[in-house]
Every structure is written in C-alpha cells, then in structure tokens.
Amino acid sequence: MSETRDAYVQKLKAKIDEWNADIDTLTAKADQAEADAKIKYQQELEELRTKRQELEEKIADLQNAGESAWEELKHGVESSWEVWKASFAKAKTAFEKGYQEGRKEGQSKKHEE
Image (cartoon, rainbow, N blue to C red; front, side):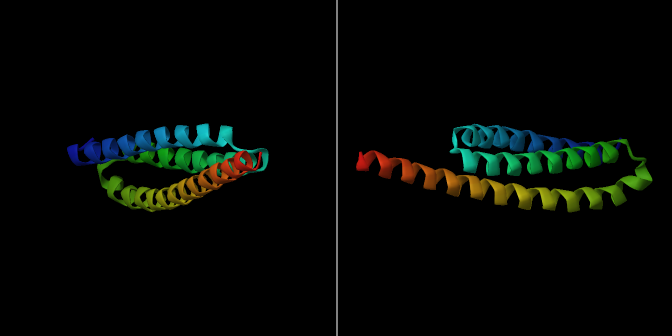
C-alpha cells in the first residue's frame, strides 16, 4: 500500500475511533433518558452504528484496493464520510438538545415538589 493511502486510511480510522468514543458517551446519555426519549435515542444510535459499519467496510475496501483503483474508491469513501459526519452531527445535536431539555424538566419537577 502506498504511503499516501496508508496515511489516509490511518487518519480515517483515528477519526472513527474518536466517534466511537462519542457514541459511547451518547449511549450513556440515552440509557439515562426517559422511556420515550430512550427509544428514539437508541434508534438514532443504531442508525449511526449501521452507517459507521458501512464506512468501515468502504475503508477496508480502500485499504485492499490495487493502486489503480484506490483513487476511485477514495471518492466513494469521502462521499460516505460526508454522510456519516452529517448524520453524526445531527444525532449529537438532537441528543444534546434532548438531554438539556430533560434536565430542565427534571429541575422543574424538583422545584414543584
């Protein structure tokens, strides 16, 4: 594998490792959510995991591709990468918003008691 391709693959894998840690954090927040929100969060997490798996498969294809095919595969990976980033950002924003709203509701209930 060329040095350029190897560096590119390693960069992608490192970013996926970072996002895996973020997914773990979101999973912990989902586990603490109320029942309705928990179901929604778990569905979003499952969708993220599915997209992550697809991206990892494309990265593996890229890693195993011949020199002539890797540039073409790189474009497919970059497209999948953009979809993953958008999906992840959307899910993370939804989690943060839901988490903050849940905390506000919990604090309001404490003040009412």
